[in-house]
Image (cartoon, rainbow, N blue to C red; front, side, top):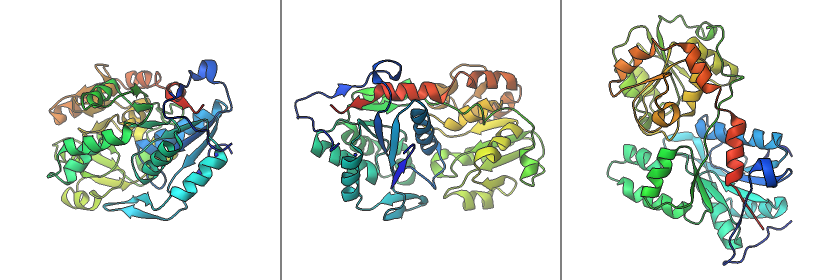
Length: 371
């Protein structure tokens, strides 16, 4: 359950009328050696943008001299989420979480997800009058509605608003998402942008396919992410495109889509240097999702020198805007073909402006100190 990045005094209480002390930017008054607790339901064996963001932020916080610990469902009683077996739901984590918060005595608490771990941590913080921050990573209203169309998005937004309401700050990845949440009545919404590991994801020898035993006809159109209904992958697979379609990732739709689209290549999940090699070997990265809040894979593709084809929707619009390193079009086929003409060097140069250190500095500035 507890994952120290580097290595809880009993948590100081805050009287109900006392305002939490806001954290100063890391480069100024925050200093070093803060104990930071990050509570998350998203953890291994999940492979997605949320887990990557949390891990990379923890690593950068450690490099800045802070003591970081994760509270996760790992190594405790849990059950798989229906249709998402790699997502574990922690069962009865309250006593252990209470005990460890007292032992670790964090200076700051961040609740990263709205699952069982997040709900438990929220309850403890409210009971002890400990200020905390939250993050809105996932468009649950869209995901729930995609699976259960009879559930209105407004109902899910109302539940999420209730969860985040007590937080001193709720962090979101883009200005567009900030405005959307505020339109639904969310308050104290702050920006926390994302970064990319430009050391791992970079141009290089296009040998990723051969290393996986694949001989693909060019051009190669690549998708990386969960194989799930909310990702709108079918829209990509139905396109009449030259060359090959390659999908990297796993999820509940993988078996069905691989059966219905036998000409596409499904590689399953890949990570680390193997994933980086697949990125740099592709010709175009296709992002068919209409609901992602950010799309970290967009930055990974761009850092690899691979231009992007996507719909002109939140997520791609927030990541690439009108920069000439992506083709955004409601006609996804037209976007894919146009992306073939985009210079790879321009994509790489754009990604070099996004770093995990800058993202982590922003995260730190959004945290609140427990007085």
